[in-house]
Length: 394
Ligand code: FDA
Image 1 (spheres, rainbow, N blue to C red):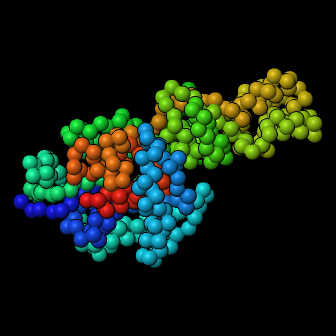
Image 2 (image 1 turned 135 degrees about the horizontal axis):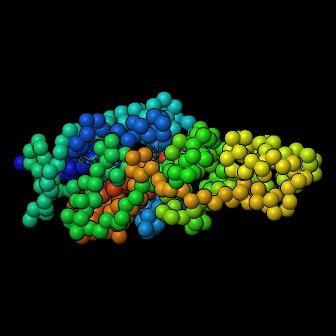
Image 3 (image 1 turned 60 degrees about the horizontal axis):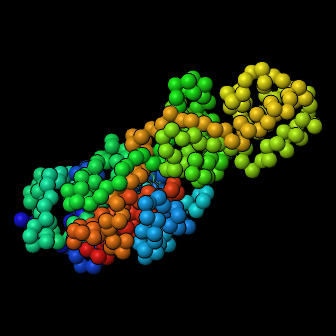
């Protein structure tokens, strides 16, 4: 039976980072993955340019049942550390809104960088390997039965990610393993995911597909994001929707301000004073695409001139524009979600090392645990930081 100091299951963002870190410490590291290619989610991330971190990372950019859990690992491996690594590998990058950092060229560069780091650190990566069973031996070591033979290791790191994008090989492997060892797994659901229309909404709003407008969206718990809103064939998407989806629960409405930064009542008052004969359709079309205006309001209302509209009608218009309360059907689910909310309960793990408190030598890193970031490079930063934390301890 081949022995390794450390076996990491999952050659994704967290697993590769952990492997390089442990390898540089002189540990004999093997990374196993059942996929044909390492880092597949990295390759498709950020529209192929990988939003690999964010300039400003704070614990409140993460959703976790215990928000203090992320602090230690994030403080010990910061976004500036990852930026320094990226620069050392000569990868050019740029900053977009809200401190998001993207590769100038391609996400492939990040995977190449991680694979190079693993090679330099002496960590081996073995792909196309199915893990059929794992047991903890009396010696305290872990025995793995794979389709390529039996392996044994002192430290076992689970970096198999969440359930989002099953076509990229996402699997519940990590959750099942946690349960096998008696660890609690919190219920999972899709995060950073577009919303879908109810059938009657679809008839009305599908023709708006492709329209993007600035917005401020508020969830029932008061969480608010000001970013672009995108109408799609299936429902609503865009950064504002993806962000708010992390805070939305089925059956809850969301409130959309379609004119963020504008005092809607004052603006309507000005149009009324300056262009009293202009109809509502043309008045609103100064601020919003005409097709959206026509979908939001009845034809009879839109055809009225501003000075024909009674106070309650003007108020109805203002309310619809600044707090459009909408009940969506649901989300597109794991098929298109960027992350999985929930997962291995962080109460079961050490926030310093990511090791299970009740199973020595067993570690969980990255998205498999109950830590999800906002949109903006935070999920990769969690993969890097938690990967390094475990890599320093295995
Ligand atoms: P990750 O999913 O990266 O890796 C898990 C690995 O485990 C995979 O290689 C998989 O094959 C392997 N595995 C799974 N089951 C296995 C099994 N049974 N046996 C063996 N191996 C198994 N985040 C961000 O910060 N910026 C961004 O730009 C984006 N963009 C983005 C776009 C899209 C389309 C998606 C789906 C996601 C993002 N994300 C993102 C989120 C980000 O990709 C995600 O949070 C990290 O990849 C999580 O890293 P992990 O290493 O935990 O899992």
